[in-house]
Length: 106
View (cartoon, rainbow, N blue to C red):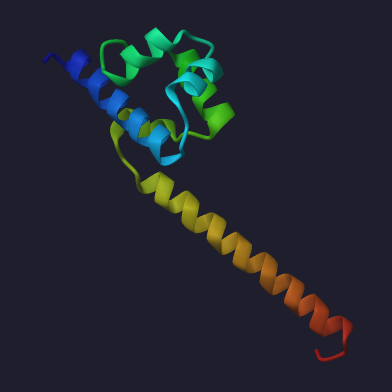
């Protein structure tokens, strides 16, 4: 398989993995990306590639990490999940401290 073919295959496999993890059908993905089901299926099988416009749609509509799709580097996904968890913990802590302050315990 040549370089471009391998890239298409790898991106397609990552997209399939993302789709299944998020319990999304191929039909729904094709609809969101404004393409036919046949063409979307070719992308997942590595027979066709995604255009820049479709990569942007994936990111905007579904928050898909484009770096992960293109390179397989999942560190940005993990870091984003960790940051979301930390922000949620900080929100909870802020609410707790505000309540203590309102009750005069601080």
